[in-house]
Length: 261
Length: 301
Image (tube, rainbow over all chains, first blue to last red; front, side, top):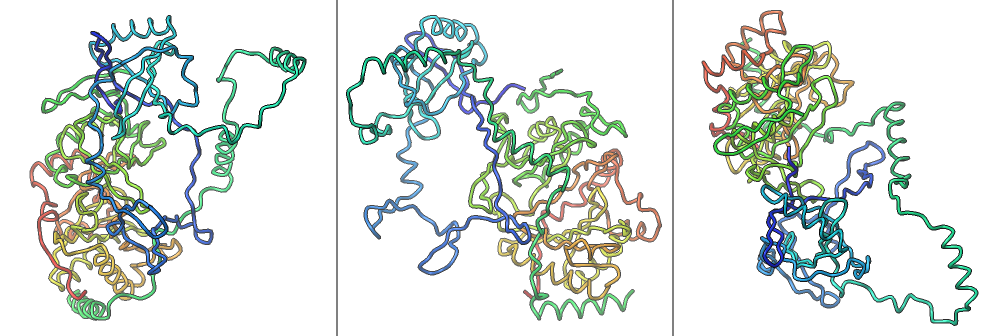
């Protein structure tokens, strides 16, 4: 079955429009765990606690507030937020082509693949090829999940990749963390240059793997084999039988049923 | 992988591996599974409608690994209806709603042999429209013991002016449903009521019944699982196939039929195979229809 995209529409520039779908390009390999109660393996849940009243607050009593100072908030509703959301994009309109090397990777946010849909295969292949040869990336504005992004579209291994970019205001300044400037000795520079040269290699991501993930998965597998699973109690065994009135009515009915048997 | 495009009500659907045998010791292919659900569609769809669907998928057949899929797969066709459901941990999840035949065919193409649904609809997740007693026999008790307990439960409920309906689980047990269909009823009510019923039965039939979850109490007895009356729990949908050696169905029984079967010493007679399910439902209609419609109120709460 064909992959179902996150978004579908067209990618266009000047007179070219290519029907495409946006699909995920990465799946984080993080191993996730549930939190359990040590004594009986009950899975734990997060609740919203009101320290003022010392109660757990139900979802329908929770609203959003923007903090403008200690104990001072501006409240905002879901409807208000929704009214500010940009309209869903139908096209990814490339407005500029730039050299891929011009974008500092610090701007890269999240990658997706663009795949051609029916009728778009030929012009898609053409665009992939041209962008590969020229090492150019297209810049566009694009609304995904109610947020407008600046995106770069580039060619990778025969496919188009769309990378959402951070806005420049999201990039933190580095002035505060860089050490103060100092004089650099010429022979020091050349020595370091020499060691870098010795360590030069082609980028080959396949030879690196998430070792910790591999070890965790192996550990889990071994545990499942050796010790088996622990089971959470399906429900809390509460004390008490129920409302006295109901129990009395049930006992009375039970007597009648037994008499008939 | 061999693929085929079918069109149902103008919606296109790609289906694959039709010849794959998913019940190998019986011999029941994916094509037969799709055909079963297509024919049972008219009867099962009202019971699936607007309920957050949990798929139990058996991609390599009933004797291989299976997995529960609650999140509606992101590769779903655009026409599949979904509902966002708030989870216990505060998060949200998108569930599929099997509201039409094409969605039912699509989930069966995913080898979702078992279809599990909550007792409430997605639009009102805290309002159960039935109270359920899930009767689960602890070895060496069997489905005949469940039948005895179900009949006692039925008689007890009648004393309280409550009509109940029974179906096979399609595995070892029976499920007894008390339709409510009232906006005012909460899972708190159904849980409290069903637990009290289970406790009273346990007290009166200590050798036959237990109301306690822990395994050590369940041996040789029928466990009345009242805790299924919970917004976070699901039940196997009536008319769903089950993943066991043979393609058995969770199927509604008339009380008279259960009475006569309970007297015979043949637990297998209480299992309904897919073919029998089809011929019976096409003849007698949906014995579980009232579960969706009948309005009843729990007394003494």
